[in-house]
Image 1 (cartoon, rainbow, N blue to C red):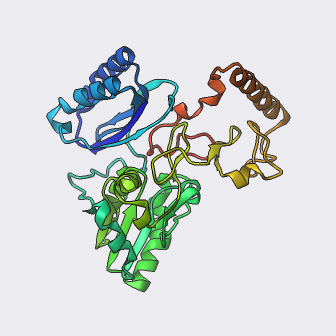
Image 2: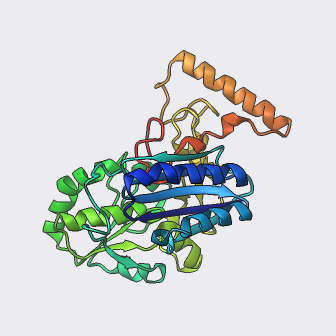
Image 3: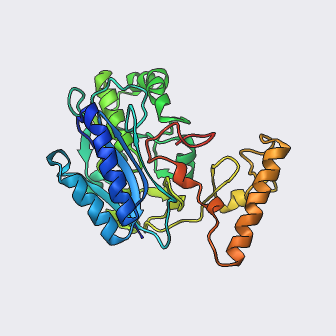
Amino acid sequence: MRVVSFYRFVPLALEELPHWRQRLLALGQVVDLRGTVLLAAEGINGTVSGDRHAVEALVALLRSDPRLASLELKHSEAAEPVFHRFKVRIKREIVTLGRPELQVGTQAPVGTYVPAADWNALIRDPATLVIDTRNAYEVAVGSFEGAMDPGTAHFSEFPAWVEDQLRPLVERTQPVALALFCTGGIRCEKATAWLQQQGFEGVHQLQGGILRYLEEVPEADSTWHGDCFVFDQRVALNHRLEPGAHSLCHGCRMPLSPADRAHPSYVSGVSCSHCQGERGAGDRARFAERQRQVSLASARGDRHIGQVFASEVEPESLSDGWGGIGP
């Protein structure tokens, strides 16, 4: 299976979005695409999987529009499907900052792109303030050395963090550069546009995000530590873009390391240390029965749908859509 992530901030007329949705859904049904594509007046954002033919057909359809001809893609592979179904949704924003009035790339220029090959030099400069624009549970799985964690649970909390924490820090320390990054580039692109609109200077972003960096920078030269959380069934990828050691708690959908799964509070398919005591007896019994069915299916060599809950998650953006924690 091939997994491809993409986004582009480009003005789309509201009246054309339903037509785009119909075309994408029709193609997805014919070639068996799986994943999610978001459409909004500000552009397109998606992560999908399928065989080579399916992915190439999708890319050809998107790039047939001159506005998307230069659409950049991040590729990885998986041994089995990483999504359960294919969805195309029309949204107010393709990445939920909570500021739909921000016109990224048109009236609101984005930060300076930094290619993966030049990223290490930038973030190792003592005059650079490195900022992880992802959410706290993603940062806990892995991040770049020396990066700040805003501690957000949703991307929509980023503007408040900027005013409460970042602005006073910048005024006090006077960094020469701000270097922002995220999984695939879309959150830091919108975040850099927001920062510049709020008067910040020297704003940079990692071009292509963490996934492009892991693809292009040799592991021996890397400043990345840990795995990279992704919004699909693989949960997290290592530096070789292979599934790492993390899994998701079926109770709260937090990423769990091997140490988390060894914790006494962990009950497979039911709860973990993050959600222990938060669910009632009814929910716990329902989760336990689901896990029993998953185990029985696995013993038969089948794949139970209870395993495939990450398909409900929208791509990296999509900051208020993942159960109790939200991506």
